[in-house]
Length: 394
Image 1 (cartoon, rainbow, N blue to C red):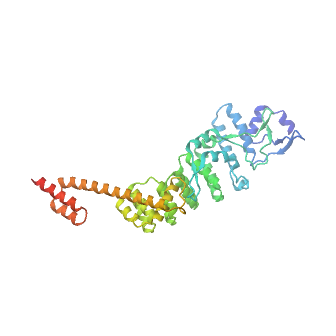
Image 2: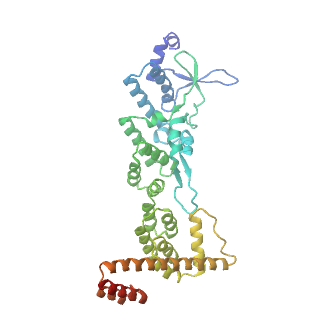
Image 3: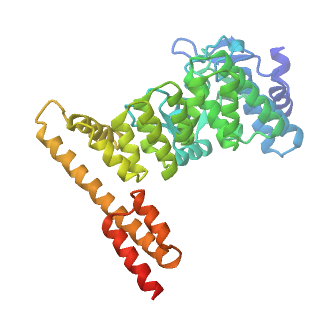
């Protein structure tokens, strides 16, 4: 057999390499022996070797069949890089994808959040897809071995550009997604598998499919993380509200960009939960100054100091030491009170101006007197509107 291979043409060896019958051994080189032969590990090493020969063939011309062969082989190669039952879960540490995952995701600076804290760095994510290459997994004992190419030259097992996996066409794309689904199902405690799955869904503009996967697998942690990484703080907050996690809910909603109505909804919820200082905070954000002022008057200086620290932590600032001099917080408390009163006065003036304009245009005496009776107008405002109404009739 060896003699026959020696006399085969380069083209024949290339074709055999593409089909997976050449070479029949790998070479290990040591100081003691220049060439130690090892049988090729067919499921774990052969796809990497085949990739080399397929790419050599493609350099000679892009035939549809050769591209299809490459894509099919990429799927077999991909299976060796993630933990699956067929590779005995040996690649559970995801060494092949480690550089990609570390480049694409970063840890969020949020000590208050207890879930998966990884966030996607979009610029580095797409750069990693274009620039990084995969090497044979560290779990493969044959990763440093060499093989003879079609010219009988010793070669190292090749690296594979990551972009080839992300560029897979329709059918192969669906097959790769199915491989990822299996990996997520079989590795419920392996966060890296989930991150890699999300990366493929995200690159293919199918991020919502990851949410569907998380729900199908009953992975509440992944569903929560999906909202986190997608920046859907409203949905993330809703999950935390269901568990009664008031503190994390506070930080989430404080960082979310909500409407005034949504802030009021949060404030109402915190109030129902008897979380008064948090309710005050969101009434303030909702510009419900009158309600906020009433709440603040019933919050102690110590509670306000605790709220001040919550605000600082939310902004990523160092919290105050509350065990020291309390006069400092009492001063902040008084300043907040005066600020709110100022907002309330401004609000009252704006309300008066709006009522005054409407009174000149639409209001009659009965309307003004009704509003005065229900406390919507002060004595001064009532008298002024009555005078304006009289002047208008003249």
